[in-house]
Image 1 (cartoon, rainbow, N blue to C red):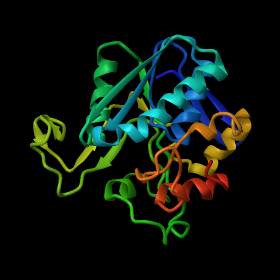
Image 2: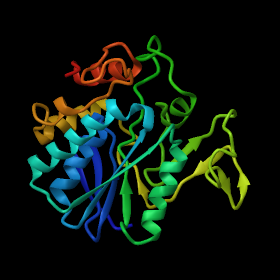
Image 3: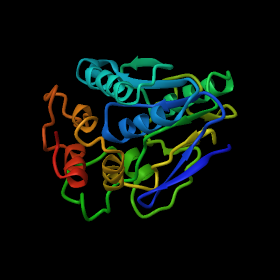
Image 4: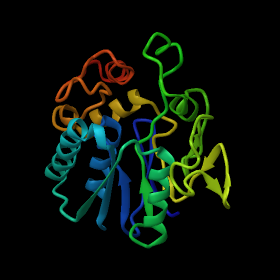
Length: 241
């Protein structure tokens, strides 16, 4: 994959400029910043993929829409396409398999994700407990390959839940290695590094306020300030809104 690398405040970002690009976007600060950067630099079509658990749509869809519209407003980019998917509880491996399908079908050449590593263990030792796959796949202290993605599948996973989602050559596996055309430029950086990029791009006052990190659905339109994700946001940016 031919990328043009930029070094911004000690952070390396690879820009693909040879064809259409895909990006996975939630409503969080990490993928929002990456979307802004791609919209600012990619001349080809940009495809934006969003996965929301159906029962959370009313909470998460509005901030996602706000993130996309704000990035378009700030950059002036118009040749982008939004693809929304919703299931009751979509597993991460299903999302990545769908990205691979878009690449294989020639719709995009590469898919970016906004996955970051977690803060050092001692920072969040007293925070709310995380799902196991988050801890194992993004834990601090390990250097990960930026290309592809590897998720540890919990032992309780139901392999019959979705056909072929958790298989390699038809054989179920507890570790799924994803396509190398999926690019995770922030996987070896944490949210404090993302904060540096917000400052560098001068979007702290414009884009950051429309993002949402909170995982507490009892606080639609705001942050609860108590969940793990709110704590990470405060640790990195110093404030929530």
